[in-house]
Image 1 (spheres, helix red, strand yellow):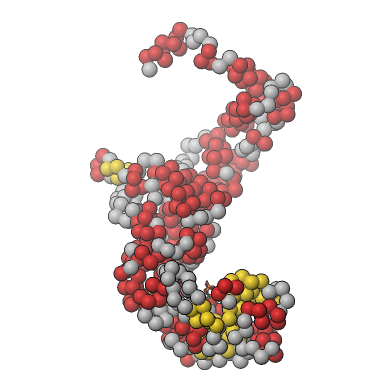
Image 2: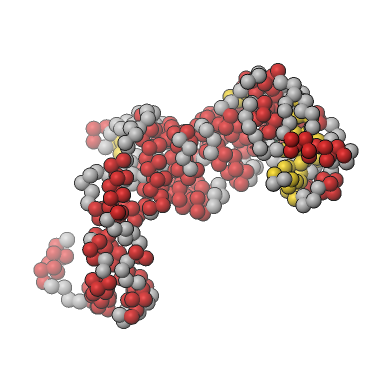
Length: 476
Ligand code: ATP
Ligand code: MG
């Protein structure tokens, strides 16, 4: 690959050439900008195109059919063209920023250089003329791409004061691209981390989510720790710093969690597993106790970790389904299988975890295991358990009430009224079948249901206890 700093012209995809000629036919100029230029100069493929030009939003709406006004206040509309969605923003300069996030006003301009001035980092402030593909690079973006460096356009402190989100964007690009952050930018963030406070949770979440989805989330998270942003955004994670767990582990809880999350990212595990890997031990600081022999224990930390995970993800406005799935994985991450587990113990485990979550939980276990010593877990990790689960399920897969040989309707026909009591009876039937799959016949279950129903009518507490039992209870 040609060094980025030497590239003066790039090959423009035919679709963009077509679009540009439509703009030109209407007397308008258009440029390729943003991430597409950056990624092309890095030799990466890119299909997410941002355009900037001198056409006003209303001009774009006149020229193209079905334009969507996606950010009209800032001059941005989205064109649908040959199944592609392409953002087009009118060239602009930004007025003052009084809220630390958005410009109070914008002014349209016809100068691409003026437009590039308002952009965050030099690597994002390179434009390409369309249709011919000449590179316009007034801030040395190509050299920074070559140096793998994230550097602000202009004075870092000023650019961060305008918009605190840029600090998180810098960290996100560090994780996504494997770039370093320029010293001046790092110092400016460290001097005033509270710049992040006016940024809406939705924007913080969008960047955090991209960090976790990146190739190496720890790059961003370590920068965040170093600059004081982690303390403001994810204090629960920062609490894990310095929490020692010598014994099985080599690292403190934060380093362990970062290693686990990186492993999940590197292995291409899904987002909920990466999040669970990052948060699975956040309950450890509050449950740490120094046990016999100077070994730290963290009893029930998985329950607290799940609660804290739920609180963090709720604060970051994650959708409920993602929160619940992640918290569930965190709560279940401490399973400790041995081949002495009975078949019913395996069935109960599968029922509790959910068959659909098994792969994710085993992925989390691999990531957790990597984080303990920083070494690749053996390929056969959890293999025995997986095989055992497969064979237990092959022998009969009663895992939920709908798998039972009787339904609520059958119970009603047998004279048991619907409602809460019937629900409890069905749960007891399921427990019995999990214990012994032979129980799953209509006859046996109806008989058991009838017995339970009679007992419901005469709850144990209202019956006189046999003398022997009474004595036991009193002794206890
Ligand atoms: P990607 O789309 O791959 O996440 P991108 O660089 O295209 O990365 P976008 O958020 O799509 O990022 O923004 C497009 C461009 O708009 C950026 O490259 C940058 O030039 C500019 N930009 C976006 N957000 C900001 C901001 N907060 N401050 C200044 N410029 C910004
Ligand atoms: Mg983009």
